[in-house]
Image 1 (tube, rainbow, N blue to C red):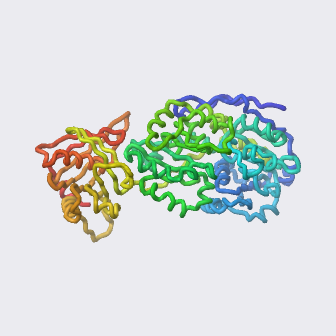
Image 2: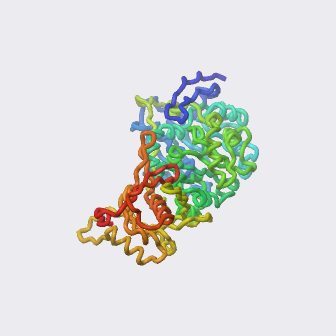
Image 3: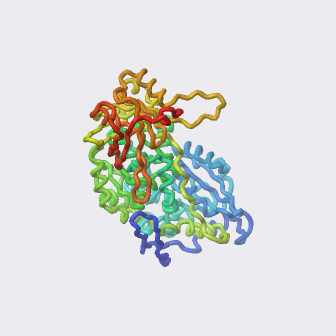
Length: 596
């Protein structure tokens, strides 16, 4: 069969580690150029090239498949000759969320019966399952995810990789798709092994979703700012769907991690397969994960946001789902948490990544596992799922316009950067605080209040902490923005801290957090104090800790050396990854009178 010459090296400067991707020698095409020409003519009404309008139908069965198709649509940007329509292919239990996602996008939906009656110039789909062969027009089949890593015993042929089963790819022994657009030459080899007729209609184009991650690396700082990560280490848990998934086998893991590791050192996020969002539902998912989310866990949205979190991440903990392949290919350290089973295919890219990654042994062992993961490069096996980085849209456009019998518009299709994660309040409102005081040096570790770990004191924020405030030794309130109403009433920092101690007999220290660097602290023995928290300068960046963590350090120091400080004192506070200088002195009038 004829082979295409490999594309020249594509360098991606932003990928961590600075290594460019190399073109795979197996990035070839088995496509026969004049294949299915009759089917194209039927779809286009035998129009001459460059004439008239074209309609592209995007057929999907689930939210995951829809999201893959949306990543492809920029190939048609700026072309008024191409109209897009969407239809939900019946037969999947995961279609409801897909319709909700489509409605938010503003796209046009064709009812299935109408989609079957019409003849389309092109049909795009990202799953071979369902009654796709009932649609009229040349079809293009895109991968459902990153590679073919799993075999599902309850779908199709149990020993075959999902997505390569001839039972789904052939109709009376012939491929129903005019084109199989694959992400890597190794996928083409596996397709040729399991379904040779379909391989004859396949070519390697790359992965548009991976290209979006690559094109979004320059937005990493913006994503982390939206998440409130700061100087913490963002660890993303990735879970596929089904009985062997991380969430199915370790449902308590997210809560165990956020309650078991210091809040000022780690931030945790969870990326779930879209099928899990559809199967469980947003309401029940939020209810099940409430203990972890109330303690700071970030639950990623199933469309685009999950990818932004991978870009923002410092490491991933994963089962055998292919989501982690994207993170590994970016150079993110990987810790494996797959407990084994029948789904993972030996020798697949995901199996090779897990074979190289250190194992997750429990919450207490995660810091050591992350250190070991940082020394093990999983990029090589992960990149066996992604060829031609940065080229997917350009190559896809050439193929799709060929099937449409149209000449593409001038220029290259642009990769759309991933949007900023949605703003959320990820902060716990009460902390169990461990503190070690050695003279002017104080080390503080804060955990959400429900942690099983023994603590030095409980610190709580008003008004959000609820009943925890009744037993807290430290209470604080953050200053609010000035109201826009003409009639206002506001506490001063002096008034509120005095009232807090009066109303909470068990409280020893009350504080108003005036700014990220400035606090008014009132201690029962030491009286009113002004506290200044210096930001840290590191590697050309300015890093700030939560001033409530500095407050706990001051409280621990005052508890160890009761009484008012004789003169201004500078404490050196270890909070998460930062060493913060905190100046403590007598309260000044500006702090006492600050309006909250």
